[in-house]
Length: 392
Picture: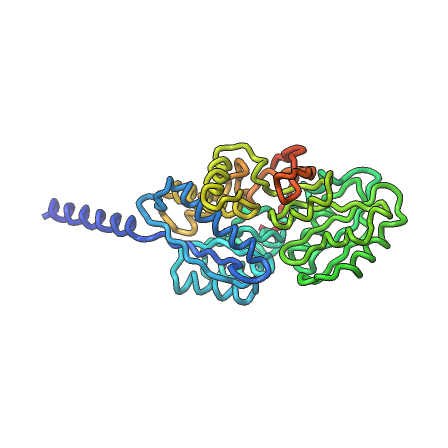
């Protein structure tokens, strides 16, 4: 009798194990399929799918479990993102979620992850507050944060005798970006902050305020631009900034936006990614396969989507396909993983991915329709004292 019970128990265990391996791993990707940041969202989706393919060796499986990605359009609207994420957790029964594109949408989504006790891997929304004051333990981020942007750009611009005015969008991305940039400056002096609506097309009035703040100042004069999505803030150069000895500086961006950089040869800044900069096997695979499929190089947010996918697969490999949230959190805290940018590490304190940034100088190359960011130097994660801003 005992032996028979043991055989039955073993059979039951085998059935449970089989059921576990047959069950899909369901991932929601909530992003701007439409809306002002649509171009960014689409790149992230492409990168996410290519990253899952790369990290699973083309099988789209981990530990015998099939990965299924469910796409949700947040339209760039906080209330829509919030409801889409709740539906993904509650109705679609996803194991974890990735996204969103906009910082404003991300801030609305953070409490939903906490309510459902499921991981939200933020990619590519940037605002510091996401892994700062609004953070909870279910939030991880592979995308860079405002501080990483700010500190790396300060490396490029923070010199004695430099005066800086900032031009940014009037929402979480712009305001967190300027706050972090201001905190990162040690030598240069910030004399004016200009915030404009995200849908601004006429920059004349804002530009005039920037010029007035800088024109009579001694030393090197710089307008540092933090801008995402629609609108071309580089139009302010048409107001003859050179007459006042004013330069423009900015961080990296998607390739279509960097067409404007061709007008500013020698401009310096720091970027999160440019396909020609990192030298590692993951980036080589991404560049080669993206060219093969789309006849174009991978862009800024394609690399981010791939990084998010690799992080998920690496964590699931370590848990042997177990999607238990607490087990995943424990696994991902401090986890190191290889990305198109090289190694990233999830900092245990706030789950922000520590990563390299790239100090660049713009070169005009007739072969490319955009200004080419040539590497001045890689800024290593350990060089950037990125503040921990949550209250953990």
